Length: 366
Image 1 (cartoon, one colour):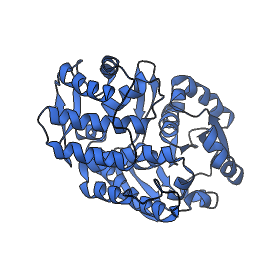
Image 2 (image 1 turned 180 degrees about the vertical axis):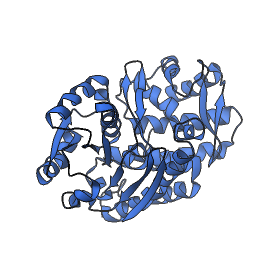
Image 3 (image 1 turned 60 degrees about the vertical axis):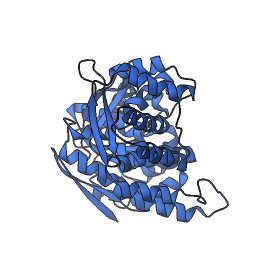
Image 4 (image 1 turned 30 degrees about the horizontal axis):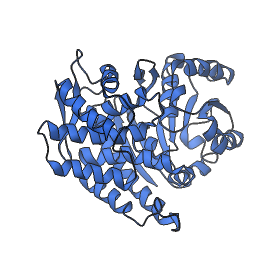
């Protein structure tokens, strides 16, 4: 087991990483404070894979499910969760257990933060993306038609439980999407993590050659997870409420969130962030912050895991307009997280519309 402590404004919690942990959860129910009536929240897919078995094997646990997908990460779905919590007998001594990916953790975490003015939350991420990023740091929330994550709160989990073995059940596309966030962590703070990720994904490997045994690939992937998480821990501990450097974690996300919104969420978050990382690197170079090497390293990392570098079919003006709701912008002025070098992020304000549109046009038309 790997245990990573996180200091938050609400006290310390641990991130526990252990293969087979999900299988052991019924036996260790008391260890994680799950003895009072609690809710296990999952989408219908994860509920079928893991949720039903866990709810049946654990005392005082009620499974609550909802449809899969970013399109359901909204206040309407949250409004449907609250009555389910009541029917399950969830009171302020109980726990909401978020079992799933980033959408599940964000949305059910928000429900936990607001139900009865806040009940205990346990995060059990089941995707690579949620393991290395969204389950850590206490940000929870939902989307509005006008933009992504515009309604939310800070809700620190009591514990985060990570079982890397569940990654073997993920579709390959979900692995690639999670790699976008891991690559982001390497770009902003951990060049060695980025290099190790590139080595793992240098052919031949299981993602590009299915004649190989996947065991070595998933073992290598599991070894990257603690270091990727530690990048986020270090930043959120220094800036828990995003008044400063926590915004670094949004590298590529201003572009990525807009891509998601304009596409009607046909683009999954990880792929949109991948293209957003490329856009951020190109904008950094255009503004003279970095050299060609940063762009090439970003491109190589995306290509290694077959993440998109371009956004064909989208309208540059529409993508730019969608950025107007980005939470990093101030008084309507564009504000981007960019790169001076690998491991050297910087928040840049007042970027011109012309410069942003030039980057977007190159990616949309390419």
